[in-house]
Image 1 (cartoon, rainbow, N blue to C red):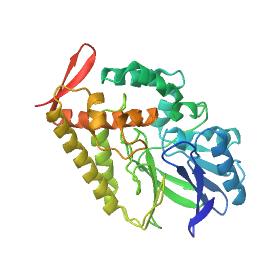
Image 2 (cartoon, rainbow, N blue to C red; image 1 turned 120 degrees about the horizontal axis):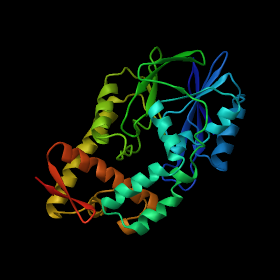
Image 3 (cartoon, helix red, strand yellow; image 1 turned 90 degrees about the vertical axis):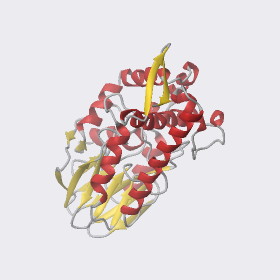
Image 4 (cartoon, one colour; image 1 turned 120 degrees about the vertical axis):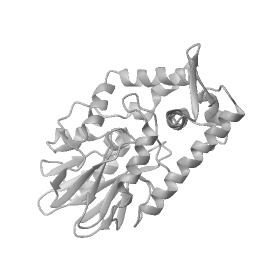
Length: 328
């Protein structure tokens, strides 16, 4: 399904369904220019996503060739999974180097192993860690061997007849980048700002202080003049200020909730804290959560715990290979 979301330049949204995923669908955006095109994000590396993206591009009369560029906003497989199609067709591919390197490093499984070891130290049982072998982020990820033009914060890309400013917004991933059309005040927010759901903030082995970085990235774009915000999932909006304030308030509540839970359950692991938190997920009880959602929930719990440890509110001690937390 395609929808024109802006005119002059002509910007289209291709809805790429994400089967068996609570995100429901990805918004792949296309800027159709006079002498070239830009595609922003792709969907998973799976037949259903390939078919949806391909049909959308076909309806727009776009063929994958050198005059069509691809911008990958961040490493997550629902955004980068089909990059191989573009690379094989000779399309230029743009991406932040930190996230690109993460894809490369993930090929041999070492980054997943590091995350698994970390989660085990946070109390996640080995049998639950083993369920992550079927995580969609693994099974539908791209082959990382593709030529890439790396981008940095503040770069200007002249693609599809547009001047697009790259805005590096670390937090959701270390290398997430938004794109901004200053003249039109159109902001491609990717998963940095979502309007119907709250972006998941995880811990990263090669990016410390993920929540702190994310909150700083929200402040970084808060005063950006925006007439149209186009997110990576669900629907967009005509303003970002109110939503940024809502997201920051959400994280304040999360931090307060964890402090309360640590007070009620002192000397707990992060895995013991996570089931008591407030979640909006499939499954009413922690035991009913899908394995992937337990993974994301524990990661988000850890990001908030890390923030509280960094700010001197919680202390961490390690006992018998597990980290436990108490109020200071």
